[in-house]
Length: 222
Image (cartoon, rainbow, N blue to C red):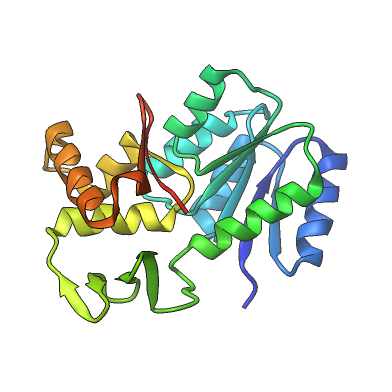
């Protein structure tokens, strides 16, 4: 089955070019030309990847993704935009983005990023066990961390955090996204608890494996 991409881009020429190339790569591409149209499509269907321009009619790409994340849409998202200030990049990641590419860009670079993001998804795992450090594996089907074949006991939230970081390996996972995944609606997210989970994972994987991005979130290095 072809993996599904939602493409939000209001520049028709660029949109058609990206759609043709992605379809040639074997993806099923659904088109949206403004934020409201994309929002409707997210209600109607599920996607394996979202490619979102920021400056589009109706609601912006930032607004769209923030709203979608709030109601549980977890498909990885790549922003495509000419807005390149640090504040814009920060807003993009805070809204729930996994990656960010600035216009103008090489089409080949976008295709490579799309392929990389698709491989990081656990919805279609390439292998049941993913090696995350030397002889340390994560079971993507049943959960759980293993040192070779011996299971390592982690708390449920530490395990959930590791799975989230693995799903988005190489990308910054924002504090907001972590809070949504780790804590239920009747729990209060705790920064102190999160730091404890991160410390536990660094002890297991190595300090250099998990990078802290001030004011943004954490990144599991490839």
